[in-house]
Length: 192
Ligand code: GAR
Image (cartoon, rainbow, N blue to C red; front, side):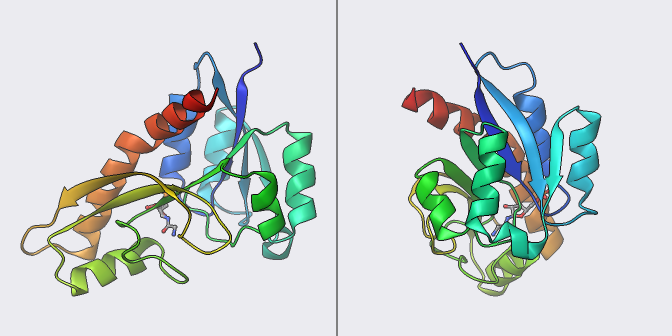
C-alpha cells in the first residue's frame, strides 16, 4: 500500500516541522514527502535536507498563488498539508482542493487570540497582558479566514504568577511537540 504523503509548510525555526519529520520517519502508513518555505534562509530547510527530505522555497508572492501550490503538491503527490509555523495566507482555491486536508497549529486556545497578526510571541504577549489563568494550543482545519477553520483538538496548560512571554512560549512549545504529530496521525488514519 502506498503511504499517505505529507507536505509541511513552515516559515521559521521549524521545531514542529522537525518533530513531525522524526515522528513519521519510520511510520508504516504516513511519510513526509517535502518541506516548503517562503523564506530561503529558514532553518527548517537545512533540517529537512539532513533528513533527506525534499525542500522547496517560494517567494511570498508565489506562496499566495493557488496554481503554483497546486502544481507543486501534484508534482510531489501530496495528500495532506501541515502548516507548522507557516505565516502566509493560503489561497482559497488551494484550500478548496485540499478540503479538510490542511491542518494548522496555533499557539492559543482559539477562538481566543487568533486572526491576522496573531502569531508566535504576539499571541503569548496578548495572553500575558490579559491575565489569563490558562492558555494552550489548537490544531484545526484551514479555511479561507485566518484561524477560523473547524477545531480538531486543543490542549491546555496552566499559567502561574510571574509568567513571561518566554515562559509561555516554552510551555506552548512543549505542548505542541507532545501532541501535534499524534493528532495528525490519528486524524489521517480515521479518514482511511
Ligand atoms: C508555533 O508555536 C506555532 O504554533 C506558531 O508558530 C510557532 C512555530 O514554531 N504558529 C502561529 O503562530 C500561526 N498563527 P516552530 O517554527 O518552532 O515550529
